[in-house]
Image 1 (cartoon, rainbow, N blue to C red):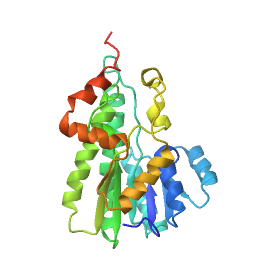
Image 2 (tube, rainbow, N blue to C red):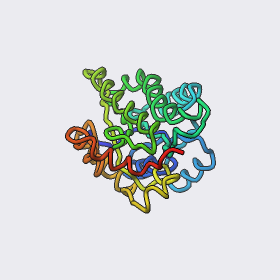
Image 3 (cartoon, rainbow, N blue to C red):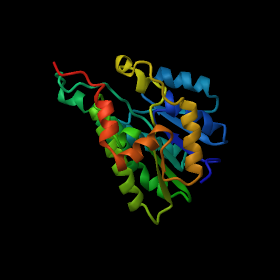
Amino acid sequence: MKLEGRTILITGGTSGIGFELAKQLLARRNVVIITGRDERKLAQTEAALPGVQTLSSDIGKVDDIQALLRRIQTEFPACDTLINNAGFMRNLNMNQPRSLTDVTQEININLNGPVQMVQEFLPHLKSKPNALIVNVSSGLAYIPFPLSPVYSASKAGLHAFTRCLRVQLKGTKVAVVELAPPLVETKLSTDGFESEMKGQKGMAAHVLAQKAIAGIEAGKLEVRPGLSNVLYLMSRLIPSLPFGQMAKLVRPAH
């Protein structure tokens, strides 16, 4: 599947992986629309990526998702590609008190958001001759990270959902791809983890975007760059080993 000459919607495209995907997909003669919640960041992205289209939208809100579809149908009716990229990750200690709505924020954005986006956009995408859905999960969908229990659960859930969605859409004109990034050098994966990660570096976001595009164009249904593929293989063979190593980063409960 060539990622050229398409009309592509990327959620959470103002930074990190979403920004790099937008940048590289623009260079391949695609129409690229990105969403975000922060108007200032959307404006900065427009300035940094001439030609990108921006729409303010929060995938954590059902009303925003419904309004986003209406705008896409009106302003970008040729849209044939949805990249569910928006998400966030926290260093979350379950021993500390939190409100019940706060503790599940990552599920709301990382899992509920993509599921609701797919449900809302699917009739539109099915009307296109060669549509594509890309769900951005994580290598932590295969081996969870004890420092981020809710994030890990949300990405494992998105992995399961994507596999099931692919089966259900078999025979339609909509392809379903999962992109499972490893640790990437973005604010999402570094903020809040400085003391535990001790300077460990991840894959550069522009390299991840290159590998993602190459994998999709090669026809891969699951794109697992770098360490993500290692985690996938170890999850099949010796899952206790990498999980045990990551568990050592967790501080004892107080």
